[in-house]
Image (cartoon, rainbow, N blue to C red; front, side, top):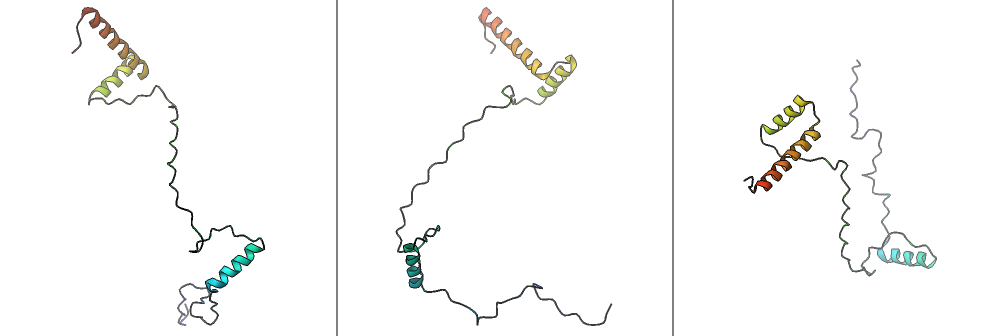
Length: 131
């Protein structure tokens, strides 16, 4: 509600930028100086945990990656669970039969297998095949 023009806020308000100030730049020491310092430190027992990535250090030959271990197969939590591919109306017929007779679907499936086995035994006794 004031008529004073507002100052535009810098991109990152509250963050000091040192990007334009090159007078305080400190260059890293040359490689020879760093190598000498590293050798002196190692002589005194200060060894770096980081691997050295210099050309002078002999790199071990790259080893072949071991094949990932294949996970052992876990036993099924529901060993009596089956996935069946049914034709269009067969699932409804199966569900309707179980509902009409108030029988669990597993029991209907067992009954269906028993009837198929009985039919096979009868056909084997008669000497005919079902095809």
